[in-house]
Image (tube, rainbow, N blue to C red):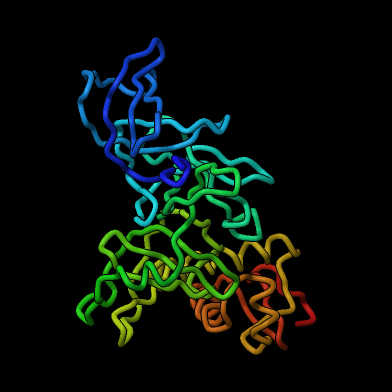
Length: 291
């Protein structure tokens, strides 16, 4: 059956031209190569390489455009549309965009890819022989990874997120390194397919890396200090938190670790912008007289 070739590149022989395209013989099956789908011109009896796909109506067609990905191979594909309750569509280099179904995306749609994000995908078909794009799983990235070396510590890296989760996100860098971003090393959970920039903070024995998306410490400290000052301004210049507060209280309120919180407090105290008393913190001009 010709449907078994959907998502594959096959050899086809041109045997007749019609009003809407060329008729090809592919392993004895007639397949239409539409004019609108290609800018190529062919002659009768010419043998060409074609990609077999199905359109939205389920018709099996051919194109001389070779896609960036096929069944059994992986390639990067750009997201072109997001359809809630259905999935996202990606461009693989042919006329039709291909669906990445909802069940192959994160359960939480807030980290679904957006338009122009990139996914590493392969192709498959559903029971109705419709072509689908399937995101690569961890083993594919692990097998394809380049081995990172210790001299890369603190180097800047760029790449695309290929796995999301509360504990952390996985990223595949432009250099081919497989990286992990722990949830404490990011300000928010990045989307699947999002392009991110970070720094290598650890090189593991297996050649994978740990990555931080946070700014360098001084930049981060300044941002943390601004977060604390904003909180104080919004709460009449005082707060029931100090350097003895519980780490979980600090994380829930300020979205930062206790060590980062203490560093920011220390900087603000040295600048004489805040003061502490009995476990509370005050803007310097807001200390109550009874304190």
